[in-house]
Image (tube, rainbow, N blue to C red):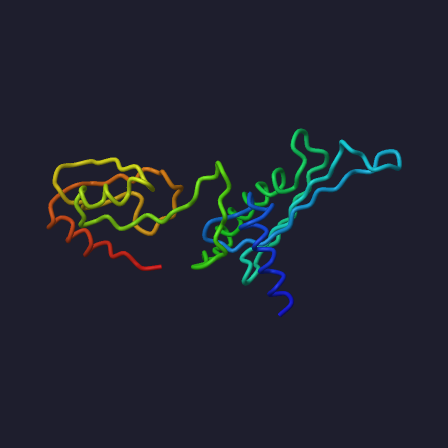
Length: 190
C-alpha cells in the first residue's frame, strides 16, 4: 500500500511537477528530479552541480527504471530540465522494445505555457467537411485530397495521439465509399 502511494506521488511529479520533461503520452511514468551542489576543495560549489532524474514505468506496474546523472552541465542546471528528457527518450524506446502496452489511463498532464498538448484524433470517416471544420478548427489542421463531399479515409487514423495543431489528411469521396471504408477498417474503442 505504501509503495502504491509513493508511485502515485512520483507519477504526479512527472505529470504536474518538476519532472514534466519525462512525461510519455500513453504511459504512466513516475520519477524524481535531483540537483546537488558539487564539493570543490571541501566546500559546496555555487557554480558546479550534478543534476539527475530517476524514472520508472509503468507507474502502476513498473517494468523499467532509468537513472541519469549529468556532471556539471553547462547552462541550466536542473535535473528536470537536463536529465529528465534523456530518461524519457530511453524509456520510450525501451518500453516499445519490451512490448509494454500503453495504459488507458494516466495522471493528466498539466501543460505549461509553451508546451503543446497531446490530443486524440477523432474518427472523421463518413462526415462532411462542413461537419468537421466547425469542430476541428481549434485542435487540428486539415489537408484535403480527392473529390467528393464525404471523408472516406484519414491519416493519422482515429484514436491516434498527436500534438494539438497537427495536420490530419482527409481523403474525400462518396457516402458509399465511406461506408465501405468503415466496413474494412473498423475502429476499436479505447
